[in-house]
Image (cartoon, rainbow, N blue to C red):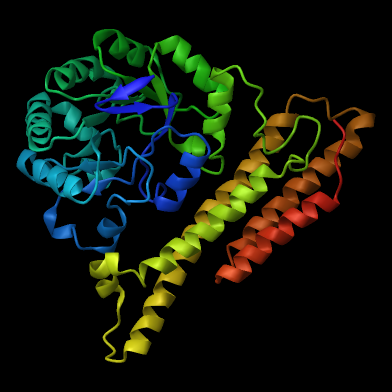
Length: 400
């Protein structure tokens, strides 16, 4: 078991914080599907931004499963300490410090992974944040600023000495961003250098890869980021493999191009879509989101008009967020098809029929994705996805 302060994680796979991705509905679906810990989107430490819609949406949600983890980013030690206190007062049970984000808009402020160039500032920030709250503080880093200056081991030792209670290490430098392959040798060196839990991160898109990385690095767990987009059940697959259980949560079976007959994934996709709309609709009517609601109200003096406009804004937001997540499901379906059949001999005469059926199914999924992106209401989106699944089932299994 992995312990972070008083919290014991039930599994070895956790969800990485991702800006614009790990909102409350997505965290919920990942948690239900086996993630032993989920972290909200990165939140800036600038107090002037606390009342913005984005910042309000990124506060700890009391309905999140424990431990409720919030990630903060910034460059000023005192400001980071104040941000940590604010997040704890708002319900955070673990505060995670971001020193791994490679985004230009973050690094140009010398925040995120840019901090790894300045060990003195790293030390000052960690000291200030750890000393400001009575909850566990964790840290996410990269292997270094660039391949010539990998210093993750040095940063890890500083972090442990200053009271950081777990580390997540992405297997690339900031200069590499998300290009090339993640390297795990440095993560293994970090594991050997410290006595706190270390989560390996980067290019982990399957249960088999997760197990391979764990064995290679000796890490306590894996942190899944992009590998969970469109495939939140990757956590249950990892758990099943590590626990020597037969994995049943596959979107496509090896002998079929249709959805698994259990239709488990269909249900989760539909529930995720409904949860997105319900969550963002509820916000505009919740007394717990007064500050956020005020910023979404119009200048009209009519209360009915205000409520209507506010609801419309949240509907638009939910539609946009739904497009992103559901299209990831579509893309994942296509990728699984490609991965499942790229090693088959589809050039033989006997396989020509199968080859055409595979191409047609991919085309159908791509068409469904394009159509979904044009829809602008909750009902239209739900009906479209439901109809898409219905059509998949009417095509029948395609024998391998």
